[in-house]
Image 1 (cartoon, rainbow, N blue to C red):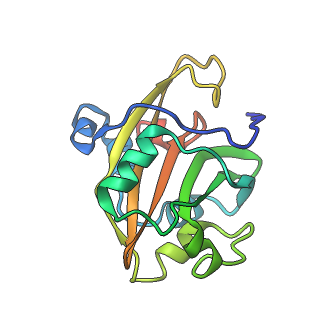
Image 2 (image 1 turned 120 degrees about the vertical axis):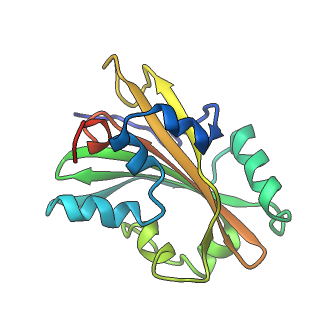
Length: 183
């Protein structure tokens, strides 16, 4: 599947409590509510894992992102964030679109020179970062998938570090194993 995303692609959707996952198939729930590293899970299924950087830099935040960040942490310094959007891929096939909203101070310190390295590799190898609760979304006829006729599923959670919070949202694309009945 070929995706032509322009930064910032965004993920301006309605989010709901993780309890909504109870109505989903078991396979989807296992992916959406997995508290481990998504990168590690994908890498365990393929020897062709790659990350494509869609873009990284200043970009407007969605109201839902601002609301989520302000609910879990004090305003971050001057309120400046960097948006990072990537595709997690199996070979050339995108499985996940991820959008992270990261305080500038963390991009200049903890995540300095992240480049094409997955953010998850740093988050899950550093126990100073604590993941908050999941929220879920459903996206119909997304620009990410064209007219596939399937509803895309996504999740997001905040990670806390000292007084900072960063937001990681992941949208599972049609080729993702999330939509398989067994995996």
